[in-house]
Every structure is written in C-alpha cells, then in structure tokens.
Image (cartoon, rainbow, N blue to C red; front, side):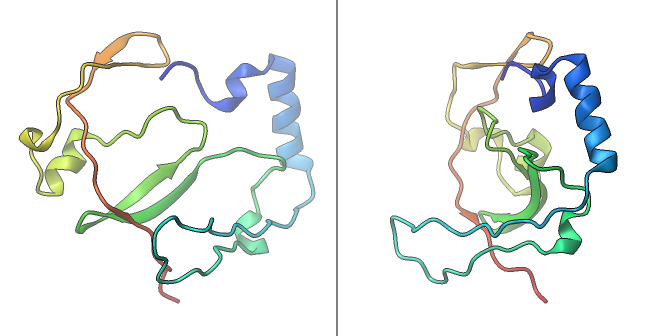
Length: 138
C-alpha cells in the first residue's frame, strides 16, 4: 500500500479549503446506500440507510472510510474500517490470535506491503474467512 489519505493528493491550499468547508458547510442529507444483488442466495435484502443525525460531520462529496462491527468467522470484530480506496485488506496478528486462529492457519504469501513511508514490510500470510454483516439491534 503506497500513498496516504485521499486528501494527501491535494495541495496545501486544497486541504485548507476542505477544512474550511467542513467548518462552514451546511448539513446535507445522507443518501441511501443499498445492497447490490448478490451472486448467491440472499436471505434478507434490506437497504442500509443513514439519517440526518449520522451525517452531522460529513462533508460532500466525500470518500471517507466507514467503520463498522462485523462477524468474521465466529467472532464479532469491532472497528472494521471499510475503505473502497484501499488496495489491501489487513488484519492485525493480535486480532487473528483472538479469533482462535494461529499463524499455521495462514497460507504463505511472498508479497510485500509498502507503508506510507514507502518501506516494505513482509506479510505473515493470507487467509480467507467468511464475513457477515447484519442489522444492528434497535
């Protein structure tokens, strides 16, 4: 992964304009986000919606990441960041161990990951796990 936050590609003046807009922009309504038709059977197809109360600090148009809680395998994992601009999906070793998995459960991976400082980091491995996103209790 090379780069930085989406704002890092902008000039200093653009960043200042963005920060000013966040402070002075009137609140806008959040649009509805709907689930795409799945390739396999869908048990429930309810749209995911956000109300005005959730959009207080949202600047439009934005591409900010979304932080949610999901079920990975049999464990609920809090603070999962969904970022459509990310080039990789990363799970920290400690989270893997808390899920009852070990490094032996990982497939070997020869790829390197590059941080924002462009320094390469070897990966422990890769794994495919089932991911479940459900409706929050009301």
